[in-house]
Image (cartoon, rainbow, N blue to C red):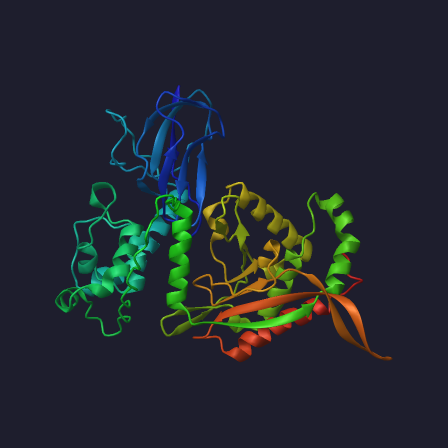
Length: 455
């Protein structure tokens, strides 16, 4: 019987670690090939980690709630199957084991996959070096790359970071700890600020004091519901966006009669051929993609006083989950895909999102987002920008309305399919002209839809 080392998988280019949510297997339990052993969470999505082999779980190396770097051994599985063990460098100290004894784990030869993982970790460390250099000091505490990245973004020095009380294992500072600290950072005394503030001349402006919490009275029959993990992430992300961007919105009403008639003409044949329904969303994504190609300065992010123009056009699609939460999987390189290609990828990511099967990389790298509020019968709305993007579009429900049409014989009133598009953008870098022209372009693109187009 051989030992298979189950490692924390690489879940995306920008994902360096994940937190163990739940162990579904314990030592002594049998596990089938491809059966889920544990559930893990990144700052974007929750994921399952399956076993590539059939066997018996021998040992677990981490507890629930532990944050584990990519490539670290999570568990040992005894198996009679032949397998190819991933070439992952294994450190002598994997963390505290959940067992009383630890097996001896020999150092394996490092191959190219390891170099890729190590390169990722090195890049993360390089990204947070400015924090350590701010006061030319070091700390005996361990800070995860995620925590260090937040600290760098918010201008928190290592000395200041070192004073945050951690709630994680062995007193480690978690993401929640540093976010809670940032909420109250503006309330510290001037003396404390002087001691901890970074002397860097180009340091960012301090975080403004958080709004005092309004007392809430709870009645006898009121129900107190604890936010789940994803709802907390959404709440923090939304508040952060409002505090970051200067939100402003522009609106147009588009005539989608051609789009509706074209879809009705092709939807049955499309579903028979592809195995899923042709929705309006791939059409909207195509229109937005063409608008971005026409107005590339909408496809940007802001870094201090610098504007980063994105080369790739990656459109995020806000998706409602059965739990009531929201997630935004991303269609990568949408400009390189046909309408059918967009439809196929959208169906795939939306189905997997609703089945909680998204990979962390599926939600990374978005440069623009669309939200279909029409799904809920809403005609118009003002969505919050999905940071670090600078714009988002909401499409309302398509409704029949009387409209005035100009014809060669004069103006006539006809029943048309109309839809409102609302475009919310970051006024720091997107002026009203650009924001308004962008949404008008999308509306015009949809109104001029070719009825003779094949799908």
